[in-house]
Length: 173
Figure (cartoon, rainbow, N blue to C red):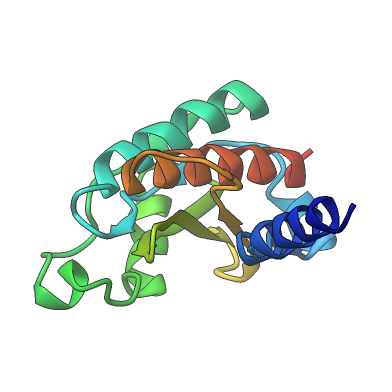
């Protein structure tokens, strides 16, 4: 009986080590003012190995889940070494101006990251939502991959982008 308890305890510890928080911080009253119209999604920033496909995955899932028209934008700035190393997201006022010019009512800026340590893989997507007319941040959504078993960081990042898009769509309903 003791080996069974040891295995159960080890399993619980292992699973708790894999836990990463999903965070949704959306101001519902601000989200309601941007609940219609086009959505502009700038190309995500972060690891260049993942940004293109993560942006594609996010846009596809957001269109599917929200039913809204989504404009997929390109990079909002020249990518220097700071971005390649996972630097900060583009300046908000510049991105809002680009989204406004594209005729969008909602701007989404995103960043993807991942890690591989001691046999543990995970991917993360964080998106910030902005009302284009007012320039106010509506909220932030962060999603880890949520995968207990994965074969690559890429797989984890794609899953986190999919989960972030679904959460974004739900927050806009």
